[in-house]
Structures are given as structure tokens and as C-alpha cells.
Image (cartoon, rainbow, N blue to C red; front, side):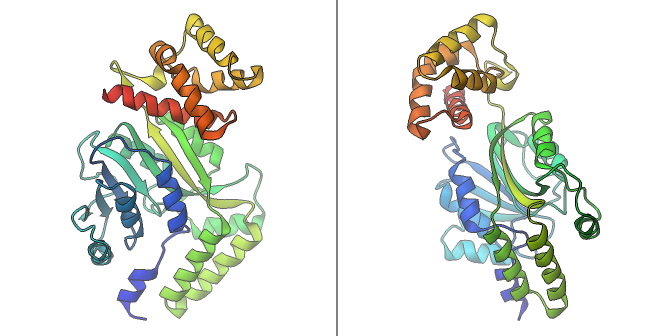
Length: 321
């Protein structure tokens, strides 16, 4: 198979267009012309999905080499996105953007290039308040000791990296000053599509390694998986990050009274615990009916993550006004 065909079909880590599209549907960008960075863009599928999802978005595909740039721009031209998609060579540690200039950074497959914590910290300065970082990561699904065969395999396959648990990464997200917006564990079909793509695109000398990876995944998939994390940088209202605002006793009581009219006591307490560290008095007083209405329309039941996302949207709207 020639190299051009190889570049067009290879997926460099487990994933799928369906999962990426699902992630993007949960990221609502408020800018009229959002600026988006697609880091480690592969052969261009993610850039095209970004261009489709955000009709006026400006997408820059960033990589440390330009191996797939011709493929990316060829696909962009074919889809008539060439005016909104561009490629740029850059170090992944020092991106070619100004501070707080990006609405979204999306990265799949940067696992080998830069570890999760460094991506959180080093890319944060480029994201606008209220903006998003979305990236997939190989994670452990348990905090229990791994079977020795799996431990040895992962240690050999990823000898330059520590593979951590989901809980560990959620802790990193909080420490870096983000809120977890969405988390999706990639299903089997994302792995099988990746394996198929690699076997078709790579030479025979690589097939045995891919088959070994397939075998370990099928045997031990309850222990590890790729997980998509979408995190959000705090919006800023009146010069202060809303994630650093705590409710005082009077504010907490006011919110509790409003919630008790709509929710059960258990639901109310869960919601308070989830939101009280970053709600302001004005948001509670002015928007509680809108919040609860949207909350009910979204799910019709008490899902604190849905409620939190509604609060997020209101914060950005208020900040932009």
C-alpha cells in the first residue's frame, strides 16, 4: 500500500467520528467566530468535524511535523472548508497563539507527546475564560492492583509514561483550575476501528504488534480504556473566577429555599453540594427560575451535571453581556 493511502486511513489512537461528534455536541461555544486548535490532528478527520460543528469556527491543526498536513488540507478543500482550516508546525509545549485567545483546544492522540498534567497546565493560558479543553487519554479503570501480565505489557508498551486512574486525572483537572464538563469512556468499537485501520495501513512487520495489543485489550479491557475528558476554564464575572466564589450562609439558605420548592430534600442537598462553591448571589437571585426550567427541560430529573452545565451557560452569557 502506498504512503498516500496509508496517511488517509490510519487512526493513531482509539476513537471514532461518532464519539468526537458526540463530544462536540456537548461543547457550546459563544463566540461569533470561535478560534479552535486541533492538536495532533492525524489525517484531518477531527478538523473536518470541528468545521462542521462550528459553522464560523477558525480551526488551526497543530503538529510537530507536517507529515499529514497535505492530507488534512486536501480533505478540507474537498469539503470546502479550506478558508476556515489551516495547518501549522509548532512545538506542543509552546503553541503559536496569544494568551486567552482560544475558545476550544481539542486533542486526540497526544498521549505519547505530552502527559495529561502538562497538557492541562501548559495549554490553560491559551484558553479564554469559559473556554474548553477536550482530550482523550489512556486510563486505568480501577485503583486495584493490575494482573502481572497486563502490568508488564503496559510498562513495556508505554515505558515513558505512567498510566493513571480516572480519579487521579479528575484530581489533576481540579488542581489545574478547571471544572470537569463531560467524561466519556470509549466503547469497544473505537478500539476495533483503530485496530482495523492500523492493520490495513501499516506493513506486515507491524501487524504482530497490533495483534498483541488486540489480545491484551480483549483480555483485560475491564482494567483500562481510552477516556474523553472535556474540561472548562472558569468564566470570570466582575473580575473574579466564579470557581473561587463561595456562598455565604444567607446565600446558601436562599438557594436551598428555591430548590426545595422544586426538588426532593435529597436532590436539593446533592445539588447544593455540587454548585455552592461557584455560584454568586446575583446568579441565584436573577436566574434560578430560568436555571430550574432549563434543568427540567434537559432531563426531567435531578442530574447535577446537567444543572451545572446550565449554570455554566448562564455565567458565560452574563459575562459576555
